[in-house]
Length: 382
Length: 138
Image (cartoon, rainbow over all chains, first blue to last red):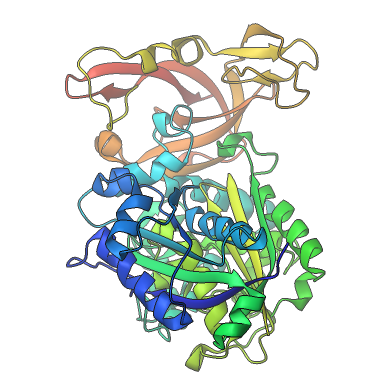
C-alpha cells in the first residue's frame, strides 16, 4: 500500500446558489481543486451525492460531471452513503491511490437542494422508509429523540445544545465559504422556532447548495508536485442498523465509536493527540454525542464540554473550526469532502483567523442517516 | 407503498407486502437463539440462523424516547403537532410509532402505551388509505 496524500482542494461557497446548477457547482469546485494542486490530469474521479435524483431528477452523476469537467473518458463513479457520501467518495479515492492503480484521483461531493424538491421528504430517505418514515418521523425528529434520551440519561441541558450552535456560528463567521457568516446568541437559539422537540431551527443544519473537491495522489507524487500536501493516516468506514430504534443505545453512536477505535489504531494515535476535528453536526445534539464517541470527552460530558468552551478554537479540542454543517452549510453529498478541505486548510496553516495553533493531526468524521454509516479520516501535516 | 415518489392509483405491491407486519404485528422469531426480528428478516442479526417461526408482537410497551414533530413532510403536514416515539414492547422488540389521542405536552419517557390499529397516511393522488400501528397512552 502506498502512502496517500491530499495535494489540493477546492470548494464553492455554500448557500442558496440560485444561479448555479448542480453540474456547474461541481465543476467550479473541481477546477479550483485542480488548479490548487497543480496536477495536469486526473486518472479517475468519485462523486459523492446523497440524492441528486430526488433533489434535481438527475442520476448517473459520475458521467455528468466527467463530461462537464471535460475529462471523459476517465472512469467516473457516483458514491452514495446518505450524508456520508462525501466521506465515502474520498475513501474510494484513497484506496485507488493506495493500491497503485492510479496516479491522481479526484474526490468530490455535491448537492443542489434548493431547486424545489420536498427536502424533508428527500432527506428522510436516509432513514428506514418502511418502519420509520412511514410512521411520520423526520430527520430532525430522529435526532430529537436522541437528544431527549441524552438529556434524560445524562442531564444534558437545552442550553448546552444551544452552545454548539453559538460556537459553530462564531467559527463560520470567520469562513468566507460559509452559508451563515452571522454569529447567533444563546437567546436566539433558545427562542428559534421549534422543529421537533427539543430541537429548534437553530439546532439544525440548513438546506444548502454547494460542492467540494480534493485531489488525491501518493505522497511520492505529491512531493514531485512541490505543492503543500497532507498525509492520510487513517481511513475507516462503519455501518449500523438503519433504524434508530434497533440500536443498542439511543444515546451513543456505535458507528462512530467503532470507527474511531479503528482509526486511532490505524494511525497509532490517541484521542488526546488530535489537534482539531471536523464532525458531523447535522444537529447540535449530534456534535455532543459524536465528540463523546470519538473519545474526546467522557460519555455524557459532551454537553458540558460545549458549554465550558473545550470545543472552541482555543479550547482543549477545537471542533468544527469551519463552522461545521450548522453554519458552513450542509449540501449533503459535499459535506464529507468539505471536512477534508478544512483539515487541509488547517494543516497547511492557511485557515486565517480561525487557524488552530500548531495543528499536526486533524480528524474528519462524516455520518449518514441517524448513525447508520460513519466515515472517519485522520490527516497529518507534513 | 405510500411514498410520494411513486404515485399510483392502485394499492401497490410495496404496501401489500408489509400488511402482515403493519396490520397484525407479525414478527420472525429465530428458532436457534429466540431473537425476535420486526419486521421479519431472512437471517438472524444475532446468531445468523435462517430458521424462523412467525410470532405476533405484544401490543403493550413503554416509551423510551420521543419527539413532537412540528415541521412534517407534506403528507403529514396537516397533522402537526404530533408525537413520534421509540417504544419498547413487552417482548423486548423496539419500534417507531406515533402516539395518538394525547395531549402532546403531557407525554413522558417511561409512559406505558398500547399499540392500536390506525390509518397512518394516504397513498398517491387517489388518496387510498394506508394503515398500521399507532400507540395510545395507558
